[in-house]
Structures are given as C-alpha cells and as structure tokens.
Image (spheres, helix red, strand yellow):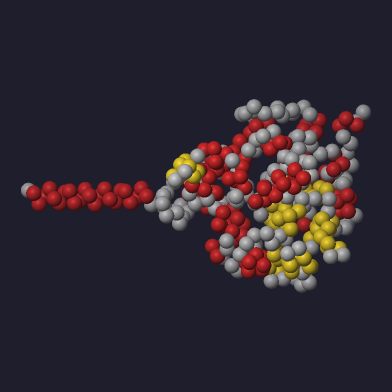
Length: 371
C-alpha cells in the first residue's frame, strides 16, 4: 500500500514539474528570446526584440544584402531593453528600487533614442523647438503602455499597419480628444481641402532629421556610433498607406557600395502652425522635377557637404544623393566607385504616386487668398 502511494506521489511530482516547465516556455510559434531571467509579454515588444531594425536590415533588399553580415553580429542591438531595470531601476543609497519617475525622465529615453536627442538639440538651436517639448511634455505623455511595454503580440516594425507597432498618434489627442489638448478644427480650410489624403506630419513637422551617410566600414572598425552626418535642412514627403507623410532616409556606404533606404519618419520637431501652400505645391524641388531635372538633395561642392533646403517629394529617379567616405574626424570625400546605388523602401513606405505628385505640381492659392 505504501509503495502504491509513493508511486502516486512520484507521478504527481513529475506532472507538477512538467506543468511548471510548460508555463515558463514560450508558446509554439512565438519568437524565442535570450532573456535569462523571465518570460513575459514584454519579451515580444519592439523595445525588447528590436525587430524594426532587424526586419528591414535582413529583408531580401535590405542592407544585409550589401554587407552579408548577420544582424546578430552587429552592435545595433546593444540598446535594446533586456529588462525592466533599464528604465525603472533607480539607485537609492546602497540599494536599488523600482522608479516610475525614472521612466518618465526624457534622459532615460535619450540613452538609446539618440536621433531624438539630436533633434531636440538642433530644434532648440534653430528656435524651432517641438511644440510638445516646449509645453513641458515628455516622451511618456504620448508613448506609454503598449508603446513601451508591448501588448503581448509579436510585431516586426513600428510602422506595421496592424497590429500597430507604435500606437501614439496626433489623432489620439487632437481629434478623438482622449486627453486635454488643442482641439482639431475640421473646418479649417487647409484641413478640409486635404481631407484624409495628407498625414498631419507632412504639414506640421518642420524637417526630416537624418543620420546621413553612415560610413559602415569605419563604424564596424571603431565599434562605435557617430560615423554619419546629422542633417536637418529638408523634409521628405513619402507615401504611407495612401497618405502623403513626412519621411526620411537612411543612407550607408560599405566597401564602396552605396545604399539608401526611404521610409516614413516622424521627426519630433512639430510646429503648431502648418506650412504655407507654396512650401509644397510647385515649390523649387517640384518645379525641377516638372522640367525633367533631378533634385540634388545632398551634394558635395568645394570640399563641403551641401544639403537642399525645403520640401522634397520622394520620386526616387528624380533625386540625387552624394555618398561619402569618412577619412578623418571632420573630413569626408565622395565615393568614386560608379556602381549603381541600391535602393530600398522600408517601414512600409512607398514612392509618391503619379496622382499625389500631380497635385503637388498644381499651382494653388492659400484659402484666404481666394475670392
């Protein structure tokens, strides 16, 4: 009888251990992680996986097709948040404690989001500080809950249409009025005329912030960031889900091979007042394209990098970019190899359609000028 009970106890113990192990293991089909301490829905968040960068780098037409270096062999992933401590652990004397305050400190975000750090620095110097930052808002006022911690669903990009990688949007505050914010005026002439064909960012973002021309050879050799040229003189207009949206580029050079990726990008330099009509319609870049000319968005003259200034539509065969080698701390020289540049459209961005460009090619008058 005693041996029978012992057998039952052993069986129950084995079953209990099996159940515990199953609860700790990821469900079949889910992404594996290298987190040594826990498994939670945060492990599927973009903050943890860094899948946005990985996806577009490893895509068949992505930059890995130029370098042949696997993403896991790069140091890009070093900023990815591997535990709650990165944002919440605060030293309090000899001990550590959980801090919600630290997670709302913008400096916590800027440890990794260096492009935004540069954006705020450039904006402030130019007297165009983002309207939200100027009002005393912080990153966490817009990006919270699933934007930071994920929602338990595995996503491949911040721009993934559904389920969306980043939920924060202009409409969330200014249209649906979920929080106290200046009300969106649907009857404003510029809002009425553009309807749902134009994203807010196309008119209210001051410029595109670009980490231009990453010199990948040197970046790998030195094992550090900074082998690029911060640039903020132009704003790209790109097609994203049928809307004209603010965009940017990521251009890279590796062993004389040239690569450029166009993508929708929200530069956090927002103006409460939108652009004037002629800032986009029949502007200098559009007129050059209408003549059949190419727009030198970035050129190199007399040993200096010269960026275009103003709004530029993304029509790839009408845009020119100079590609450079970094030869010294502040010295660059053009890549002499004439090999064709490899072009990628990342983050679900697409070139402007003929219809979208034709609208930019029309001369228009500001609503207040109409009789």
